[in-house]
Image (cartoon, rainbow, N blue to C red; front, side, top):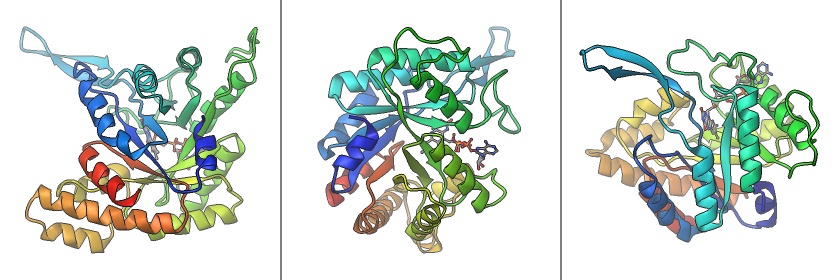
Length: 317
Ligand code: FAD
């Protein structure tokens, strides 16, 4: 079943989470064991992130370094297929503009079609670390909506070059990203919402939020989205705090605020273990309030927090 059907079929808040493909060379065992930790809580679907190529500096025998374009976390499609085959859960690989040409995207769509994977999260993707600002590949897509158009065309039976397929493919169902605290590049929240509305009109069946720690920001965002005529499910993305350092790292990386009530409690903690316990407590309260508001699904960002998410899921589901 596709994500949208799973959400619509559920009369209570569904559980889902996002995982990252393993670092190149790390193997898949740890990832599978993380998934098995969370399987007892009946995830309706699992998202798999995608990571573009970036420059790394490789040591040379002569003591110099050579700059090489490499993908540190390859394997999104294969990881998705492995999870689907092993656990029979709906998988949602992320598909990006960043680092991909439309031709490469088309090959990914073909791979996914042959693997029987038809759910996607369609994203522009982050800029590469060596880029000052996001820059598409030559002939590549500048925004998620442009990638949506390519997928829509594929769904209608046309390749990117306009050539018609011999047979209509199975239909991809997709969601997009949204930002209760505004996307960092948007001049204002209204403009950001305008583009979300365009993404929904272009075929996004649901939206998943960037992480937030203050439910009021989510409620206010959903309110504004509804007033703007955006009627698809807006799935809250939630991350439990695990470490003291996240007090600075999360706002810097994701351009979000941590509420003072949370930040001041974190500052009182004497160890990361105490922060993790506080993070669980905060997230459980956050989730209970979201559930009381009837959110369709809670989507957990699991990186580095699988054990916390298991505790939270046990407490709320
Ligand atoms: P867009 O929708 O293209 O929006 C980017 C900015 O441009 C926004 O400010 C928007 O208001 C504006 N905008 C949108 N359309 C237009 C247009 N047509 N013309 C002008 N302006 C426009 N990154 C990864 O690299 N890999 C991942 O797997 C990944 N997963 C994610 C999952 C979730 C749930 C979220 C919330 C984010 C994820 N990201 C991931 C990060 C995401 O790719 C970045 O936040 C990126 O900067 C924006 O992506 P987007 O799809 O929202 O872009």
